[in-house]
Image 1 (cartoon, rainbow, N blue to C red):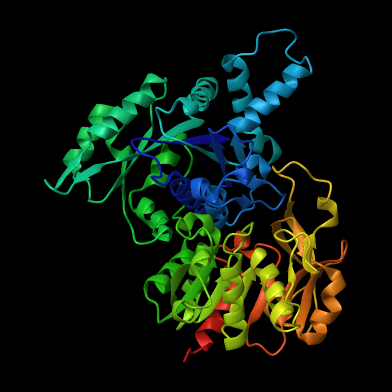
Image 2: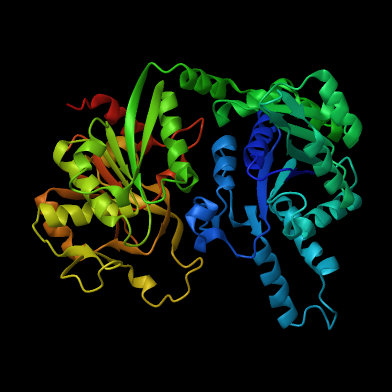
Length: 534
């Protein structure tokens, strides 16, 4: 088993996750069994309690872990299912060590960063390989080289390199080549300093991947190689590209996968098979039509808060040879006075997940707009719940209808706290999380979309559709077309007589893949293409 560690330097947000996913895709396409894991240096146990504005979306794995959004990239690119063991934080590391110390497992020793913290990190580095026979495990180390929080991870990786040897452990360092527009020069000094900072920790990068706006001349690559002790052929340029889905081809052109396999003394196994990926890219880059989708949410200023939804829309559009133009609409800005102007001309409305009261009214108005004007509608999690509230208020005329998340004393609690959540007091990792089966009623829109039952989808919520009101809702035309039978929970609702109106309690975006877009998003885009606004 081989281990690849990916570090980042100069600035944050360079795209280590995309690099890891792209390299993994190339190695996988050559026939190697690859997985990717993310180690985050913050002290939170997981990102479940973090503000989306600060951290982006919380990705949920099949086994119910709240993880870093980069795991979404890993799954979308490689078509794999990650687990709770694929995302480790400093909080998890220290929690484990402190629990062991309290139980007396260290036999009276003084617990220290070295060896106890680094030993636990190394155990986590290799844990996935103990459960499955992977050929290559790629580990993305969060943060930037030089950050004090990242030092234990780099030290643990250095130790693993020492213990296993250079034929089993490889370091890839992602850095930025600064381009000065005023002088039209590429500057390598920040990259040199970043590598030296890494070398001070005892780690010598084997491969240097250089993010750049302009092509790197051979002389500049030679200069970088000279000052960093990295072989010239291992200085890889990563030019900015229009879409993240082109990155694997960019890195293949630079022969990054060959450099890695040669370093590990592994056979090339022929050219990587990227046929389906290439078809997707060609359709994405040569759209035959376009469609405007309104994404209504309260975190739209940071698009990463809805990263999986955004990518699911792009993937579905790509396979339809359609350019998806997303209108990012802050639900907090929507009012009855401006709703017509803000949504006029869109061909589909997606009401996004979220928590709390802020932006609720705007989402309610967006749902009503879609229902009344027959605009294709997709509601996810809270988006589904709001669709139920809107229908109850405006069709059944239950004006006091609400969710008890916002109004605990409403006369019509059409959305209520799940029974199993009533005694929960801690916030972290206590929602209904992970994949659950959903039985779909035949003859419904949901059945037409999925063409099978049961389906398995991932969840992240505490509130549910109150079954007490289902008979009245269904009699009026709001159908429960998907249900989790074991707990009798409504999973999918749809509107009778509407061309495309569907709400789901789960998060379908987490299972959309580049080579296998999610059927709900495909059907939503197809419906939007059929809709022609006045």
